[in-house]
Image (tube, rainbow, N blue to C red; front, side):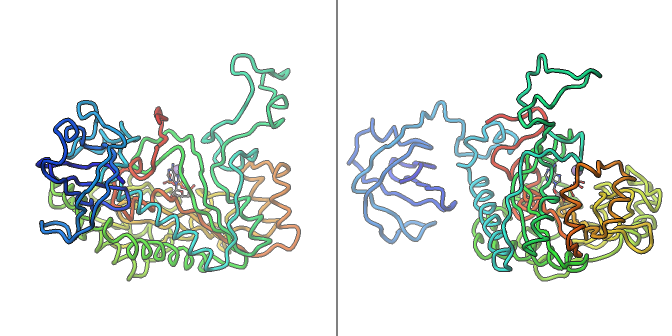
Amino acid sequence: MGWVRTFRNNQFVALNDGSTNSNLQVVVELGKYDDEFLKRITTSASLKVTGNVLESLGKGQKLEVKATEIEILGHSDPEKYPLQPKKHSLEFLREIAHLRFRTNTFGAVFRVRHSLAFAVHKFFNEKGFVYLHTPIITASDAEGAGEMFRVTTLSLDNPKRQEDGSIDFSEDFFGRSTHLTVSGQLEGELGATAFGEIYTFGPTFRAENSNTARHLAEFWMIEPEMAFYDLEDNMNLAEEFIKYIIGYAIENNREDLEFLAQRLSDEEKSLPQDKRSEMDLMQKLEFVLTNNFERLTYTDAIDILKESNHNKKKKFQYPITGWGMDLQSEHERYLVEKHFKKPVILYNYPKEIKAFYMRQNEDGKTVAAMDILAPGIGEIVGGSQREERQDKLERRMREMHIPVEDMWWYLDTRRFGTVPHAGFGLGFERMVQFVTGMNNIRDVIAFPRTPKNAEF
Ligand code: ATP
Ligand code: MN
């Protein structure tokens, strides 16, 4: 059983059941069916075929099914079916995202996505990590306030207000102000300080109005958190993890990856020579597997960027002003794609541009943070060793205006048997982009949520 991809010469049906891009050829006996019936075997009609599997005489397939019986399960009007057997643009396919799984490209992308997700669980399970489900609705606004989606059952027209005019959230469903989570990390730390090693893998939400090819409003994040790990252990785990899941996909999805590699090379043919990738997708993945990621401090990265010809010729939109500045994606991509030509781990960032929970280094200026940057994508992982010293953590929270009293539950981990610990967050869709070579993040999640778009 499957869906018709093509039907040629009233004789050969290319039938696809979604398990692979390789269709099964069904041979229809000439003269056995009337024209009315044959006319209804159209692209995307669903068929049930009974027959004998034989060695194929034709080119292009080893086996075929000689049909003894064909049942049309569902008709598909060829005048109305939007997916013709020809090349459609990815933009057009986004408008019919409910049908795009039926194309070769999206078939391949989503089978690879499945494998990567499976490999995530396999990796952590083999290491003895506990899969912790952290909440999706959260009352903690310690991170990313302003970038969060509000969750409420209050009336939008006339919510009850307090004397000062502000909305009275004590009347709201949870009796307080709540949002969709931007990260499960803080709860992840609670798990790590009991189980030792945990990971989360779930949806996260950011109401950031950034219309880029690598930001979604709803995306999936993997966040391991490990007790007794320092920053270096954290980097080692992240690198091992990335290599493991890529290796799993290469082993289990070779056919789909080779298809996607070909797709990418074809797409790049329309680009000028200097914009094309030096390696094809398969080579790039093998390269990442067999080479160490480059590790350097933020300080060294700033020096490299500052001294680069690119900077001296003023080719950066944001010039390198010096130590302390936040790196823009153009800077990250320069380091990864032009300078090192491989994945890069940057660490020890200025504390001013990083979150309150990151461990303060001895120099008083930097924190034990690390970002992993991937060619073509930019930041794929953000992580750090966490500040386990209660006094230092609280001081930093007050400096950064984090509501210390509301975070009593978080600080309890530092009060009762605190330990050095570390963790990171990997954006799952960015990983899928990297492995499939898809340029736009909207094409690696089934139903993308982006500003002004929540169709399907
Ligand atoms: P960026 O600078 O690219 O916006 P970030 O610094 O906001 O990333 P973190 O808060 O560290 O990212 O989140 C951890 C990881 O989640 C990132 O490394 C990235 O892989 C992924 N990520 C972050 N924001 C998004 C988004 N809007 N859509 C998809 N993935 C995201
Ligand atoms: Mn961001």
